[in-house]
Amino acid sequence: MKLYRPRPVRLIAACVALCCLFTISPASAEWYVAGYGGLSFGNKLHDVSMPDEGLRRAQQQFPSVLNPATGDTVTQSFKTDNFSLTNSAVYGAKVGYFFTREGYSWLGLELDAFTSKPDIKQQNLKTRQEFTFTPGTTTECLNLGTRCPQVGVNNGSLNVQEVSLRVAALTANLIARYPGKWFQPYVGVGGGVFYFTGSGQFAGQQFAPGFSGLGGLKLLATEQWSLFVEGRYNLSYLSNFDPVFGLNGSYQAIHTVAGVSYHF
Image 1 (cartoon, helix red, strand yellow):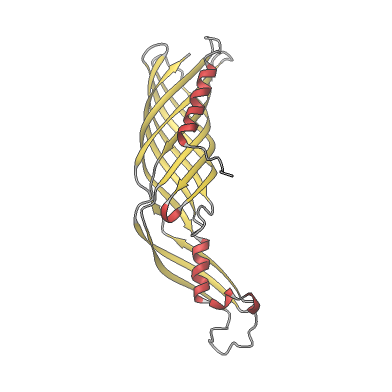
Image 2 (tube, rainbow, N blue to C red):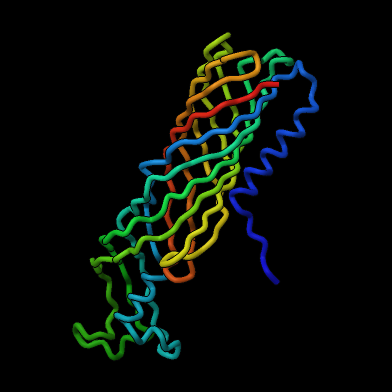
């Protein structure tokens, strides 16, 4: 059976479909829809670890742990430098509502769908592995023999090839604005679901919760049309992303976008 995997275009299409539904609302309600595009830059994967790769290296160092009959165990942590990601285009659509009718014209709620492609750059990373080897029996341990309990650190490197990585997200944000007649500065905070897809050296797919923070300025050109510029920050976390390395890391991204919105 083929598993269904949502695509970034489908996420944005779903958001636009919701916009169409909102057009049946009374004209006095302050609904709006918007489209935008911009640049995603300075993105990184922080606090990177690879438990599967670390276990492989530990088993090569202590091959007897591959034999369960010996009762040997090894625990380890395998960490690397931060992953640098490429700058990329980001684009999306959003729909929102300000509670003007309810007497809170400064407060709103926004549903946002967007996607970007911050590929993993080719890079050579420093690695650090801390390990503890515990043999099933110490009867063969003579002074510094290989069958003795050991605690240590292995420093090394890992060559990372360029990897295609796409991020799509659907977020809900609480918006606070200054409801000026022509200029409306605003800030927002919220969260949602991030969908990561990778290929090549780190091939995998994963849904993960994420944080969204934003701030911007809207210029009201007419009663219905406006232009806006916006800065964004996103945070999410990958956990055992791929089946080979078991990539873990916190995804942090900064976006600058500009767009146009239509108010109902």
